[in-house]
Image (cartoon, rainbow, N blue to C red; front, side, top):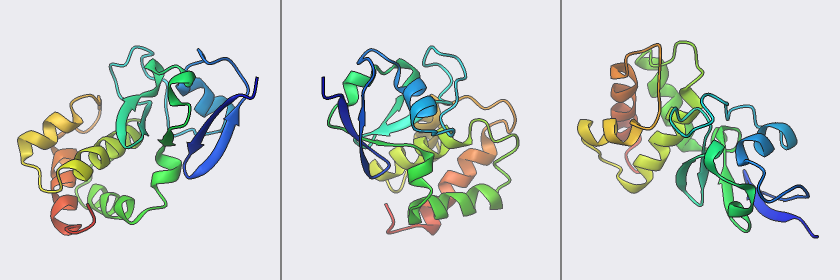
Length: 157
């Protein structure tokens, strides 16, 4: 067996384990991507979010075999981008981060939304973030931060 090949944060990797291993576990345990968090193991909280070929997925619900040949991006890879810088600035300005547990997933959800809709309405932002649970901020600060990033980062998405 040659292993399962995919691109992780811009680097080609080959995983030699089982194709049914959860992407979440492989990202954390084999590739040390600690931004993906194990929150619920059921796809309900969004803490384990990753972008697979630009689409947001909860990695706890993805078998590694499903990413064969795909591009997987976690916060470790996304934080090296100009788009991340715009979101990071907005999250700071709007005090949208408290404990930080949900923020990698929220940030990737914002990226997934803005890459398809660079000028979302508040309702579209709330819908785009709806798969991510936050126990600290009450969501308004996060929604406002994403809206500001969309305005301030015009042309990035």
